[in-house]
Image 1 (cartoon, rainbow, N blue to C red):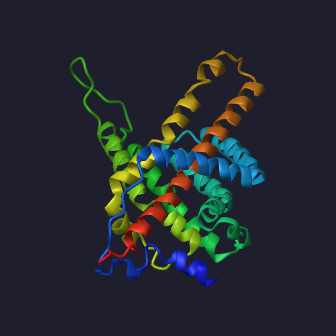
Image 2 (image 1 turned 135 degrees about the vertical axis):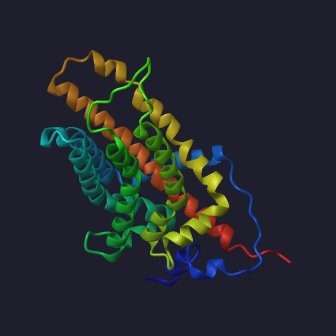
Length: 286
């Protein structure tokens, strides 16, 4: 690894970042500015890696259909279906890891990213995929909890309303909690991509604690237009006959939307990594 790359990698999540030294608090960019950056980064990635982007759209289109429909034909057990979907999600993450690595490296290193090895056999890829798999498990935890707490038989009650089930209470709480945790740990992905020393879960939680509210905002806001984009053609898809053409069109649209959302999150995570690293390594002027 070159000296320049080591210097960049040491910006955040290194043991030295926690030394009690004088630092200056640089002002946060506005959330609107961060959103514009995210979409500009999306445009840059698609323009630079358009072939890999097309492959990623195809993988997400096929993978999303397989994750949703495949387990239904495999078994009727909700628990087994959930486990199968998680396994398919991890497999899809493996196929997308090389592209996501390119996103982080391109935004952090610029043209030098083309020289970095992101193949399946590289240590960089294995470290990144390992962390990405843990993120998938964290995001899947609420659905697993809902399956475990769901009643296995008929429920009897007296009155006009059924009793509140544990799943209906725990699942939303777990979803919100996992979302908060993932937002705090998201900088681990670009840290793993660049090979930052000290890129541990504890250090990520501690570093992102200084900008947790800002991080959550800049993750959510760029995704709001994507949600509206995903919902826009729903009425049109409902009018189509149940044919193979309709399914292909719907899966392709879903793949495009998921690609935009995934790339935006990767870009935002990279910019958060840079921002928090600048905050941690800015000496206070005397």
